[in-house]
Length: 317
Image 1 (cartoon, rainbow, N blue to C red):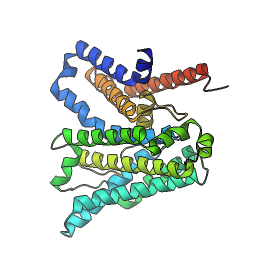
Image 2: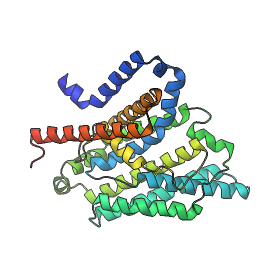
Image 3: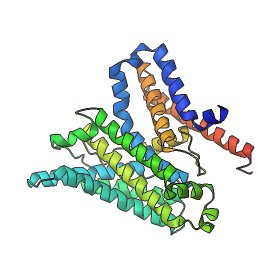
Image 4: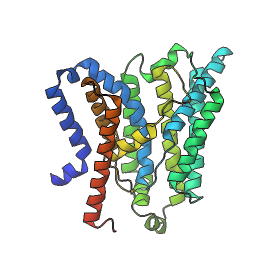
């Protein structure tokens, strides 16, 4: 039982947190409030799922927020341009264009990290600024509006369960990928010890690049969902989302040193953060204090992870 609780501690924390808040605050368990939490979760959950893949390899992607904004802008521009010309398939083409741009950016970051041997912190920091600047250049700093009604379905404005379903499918597919495929085992091996993984015949550089592309694709899709949800594509949107994605992964049990974590844990971390934010809103706590609460939680969990690894001998002074 101790091993089970240690392995699935994010899910246990999530369940206990929900039970305590529901017991103490009747407003929390109202259907309208639960839908509100569910409505906000998919964007961060999808983004955190992709971030988990990078963290498992021992890296970090700081560009996911900017990629979400860039993907949303490209998607919006494509849709509006095709709609203005009366061309069919505008929404599909817009989504494809947004994902293609995100994948290209992810490939550049992945190549720089895997083959250029540039630390992922630096390569993705540069991509974060490039993507944000590109979004501003494309739009001229002006948000894009005026989408067709059928695009609103993706973000859940016609039903909160639609983006939640997309998130659930993505989490399920990534879980199967990590647990039941050779690529998934390679990802964990690379994060555990990249030199040993290379000597074992694992194509470390190729798999690292694939991980960055997958992370960028999911960040781009999250940006498209966010654009549909708020009905506007802002070049300055999704600011700070990369930090929330990393925080969700850490709260969900992922180790920033690599080789440890799950996508389900990242989803649990996302839900924990969203529930805490919702709790603060119900208690009328200001946004600034909400950030202090989440930031403190991240520091405590990283400190615990470091202490646990040092105690078990996995981390030396």
